[in-house]
Image 1 (cartoon, rainbow, N blue to C red):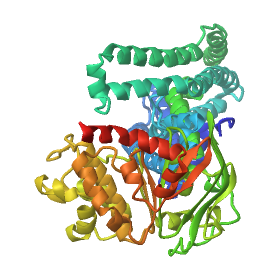
Image 2: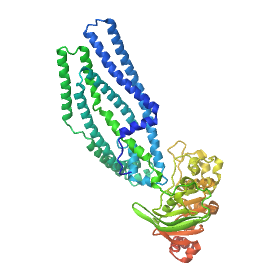
Image 3: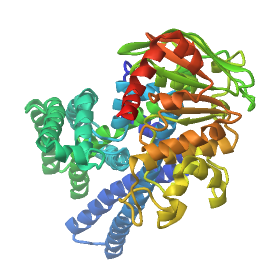
Image 4: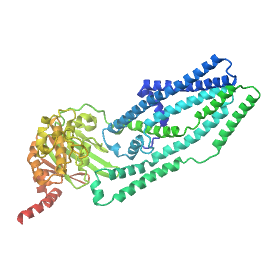
Length: 599
């Protein structure tokens, strides 16, 4: 994606609109043509009135007819302006909605999440939203309608001018079009520069979000780096804008104005001489003068083309994100429907190697997880514990090797039905600023979300300790930024995340994955989780990642990861007897507690 050059934005807008709404597009085209015809009719009618005045209005009825036609054409032309504005506005709203939906669907479509870490994809998402240009895609529709209306009016003026003398529109059209194309080239350079400046502008947006959001509000103030955030935003934003300003600077040139002046001089000289020797009457001269002025619509139309080009440039980026293809990133033998009883025998990692762009993680990992048992995974930071979980959930694919479920390559199992078998508490779980009901109910969207449906997950996760204190119960927003909302402590949020996973278990998930499930809990709450551990994991295939060995020893088997592979594997008693890394770490962590008991 990063190497692909986006298509012409204006052409993409023209292609998208008829597919999005054929009737609205056809109606807008009809109105624009009608406006151009009425503009020509106004020129002819006004010329006829001028001719009547020049002749002294010898035929009163004819003069009144001409005046009536002029008024009627003027009124009709005015009446069509709000119609075209309504149609283009409606198409603009639909286009923005469609492209927003397209971008969202494209970002969500891939099975994994690797594309979200791709800077090229991140840049395109921002470009699709008009971050650099400041012009959302909907503005392209309004500008396109105005441009088409102007171009049709200019073409009609050229035809009228040609009826006076066939060659008159040629020098004017050549001059206006040449000047327009030159300026359009400069604008396109600015649009290309926007894509190049996007990394700097994304840095600026991140610094801005840090400064005005509440996620970093405490640390910004406690550590006192408000000035840093302000300076970082300013430097990144101005750096991006300088690139745009430099590319979009229109150099002052005299060739265009001189060419226009010469073309108009030739036309006006002919009209003056032809009128002087009687070859053109007042009506013809009036038509010619209005048509000459009207041909300016074939040239550069200032803000209209500027906005159209920059707003239209967002469309190819949105469409490119919308085409993100799951199969391009996740090639397999061919996805098949998943048996919802999986796993029945085991989950196995076979010679799995995987690394991120900046570092390798797993180096030939072999690991089996028997179905219905619990496995604890321990290891130093960076050993690959969380990465292993992401591979299991198909958020990433192994570089080599494979993950199998009952002997079937995970890549050949339908990812959506497989994930319905998973209930995961991620270490960096999301704190949704939504009602508690939604926070827990996301464990299985579409299931019964009544209060009674949450009873068991609430009991096992410990939500019942603070649920009665919530003003609106399950419907309390978990954010003070919403009326009637509240915020939770870290430990309470951890219980919400656990309840979400247990709600998935209640509705059929067979594999429970707990990544540091007690990291934010106090001693009492952690002990409560230990007490319910066997009840929580009964009948499930459980994978537990933790640095707390009091939790780890509850699992049937323990796996020690290091250097990208399995270093030790066995029960707590077996690994302690082995006297290896696990025994050393367990002894190291429990030593302070033994010393405290002897004090």
